[in-house]
Each structure stands twice: as C-alpha cells, then as structure tokens.
Length: 136
Length: 114
Image (cartoon, rainbow over all chains, first blue to last red; front, side):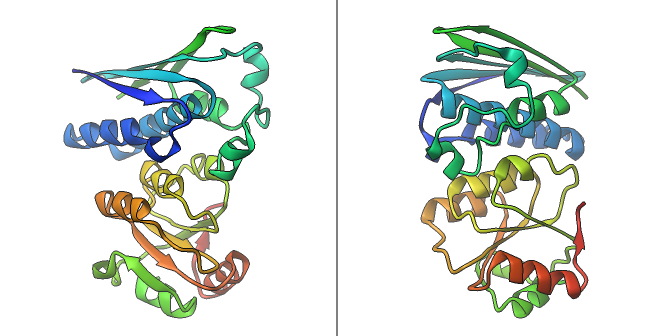
C-alpha cells in the first residue's frame, strides 16, 4: 500500500496532518501500538522539519506486512553539515518554530532513535530527502 | 488516579472529554518543549504544559497521550479542540502554574515518567 501527502513549508496549523493520517491507517491495519508510536513520532518530527525549514515537501509511505518505508522529500535549503544536524541540541530553527515547542535540536536524533534505518540525502540550496524504515 | 480527582486537585475545568472523568492515569510528564515530549517512550500518561497551540495537541496525538493539562488559564482554540476530538484527547484547563500542578499531583500519587 502506498500513500502520499504534500506538506507546505511554514504552514504550522496543518503540520501533523500527514502523520495523523498514516497513524489512522496503521491502527486500521492492527499494527502493534508501540510500533505505531515509533513510526508516527519519527514521521511527525520529519513533517515538522519540512514545515520549519523547507519551502514544501512530499511524504510517501509504503506499508507492507513486514514494515513501513517512508520518504520525506523536501525542496528547501538543504543541510550543510549532516553530522552537526544530527548532534543533539544543535538547531537552526527560527524563533517562531521555537515558540511552537520545537527547534531544540532533538528532531533528527529522535528520528534516528525511532527508525530501524535512516538515511539522509541532502543538497545545499536544493533540498533534503529522508528515508526512514521501521520493521514490524 | 482518576481524571475527576486530578480536576478537583488542580481546580481544573474539562474543556473536552467530559465523558472520560472516570479514566485512570498513573504517570505524568511536564514540559513546554514538544520535542522533549516526543522522546518519551511510554504511552498513556498525562501531559502538563503551558504551551497552548495546535501542535501541543498534535504532539499528544503522536505520542499516544490521552490527557492534557493546560496551565495558567490559557484559551484553548477551536483547532485544538478539533484535533483533540478526532484523537480522543481529554483537555483540562487550570489557572494554576505548571509547577504548582506538578507539585500537587506528585504528592497525591501521580508518578513521574523519568
């Protein structure tokens, strides 16, 4: 099963809708609740990152009995130093993002912690693609 | 601890989820930082926060947090209510500070997550 959602940069009122929809699908498929939590926490962190840092993005999810494979592809500034971005506490988030309760430099490390596999492809000035895999 | 008991201890008002006053909760976590809430590994705890926006409710939804306390008399917005209703989240508002709520609920037996 494949689903896709568009995410608009800067649109905080709608941030989380894609994660919410995917959570509903996983619940309907009777996936274990602790696995659903890992998937949606990783996905929501990634969705908020698109809203906070990029111009727009597309979330794609392939769900099958053995797991979920998610791609979060954005058009945005890219990440100049991935290692630094993966460091807990490092953040380039704006004041507005911090006021929403995010931007503490915990997003990418938390995605990595919840994922079985995470890869980050990024081109400065073009955008970033996250590939997240969680096995059921 | 029952949700009704929590409400009475913190002089709180349930703004959504009145039908779940008899639900029981054992653990609590207090934070204004939603990134921090998203790192909590357990499910089914009550979240105390001073952050009153739709992303606080979304974070509760993603973290499997069924109960929230919004401290310091903040106004819950229609979009927060919409997400809470959809996700079956109880929201309690109180005039008490987060520090005061945490203190009262801790001494009355709610357990910390960490």
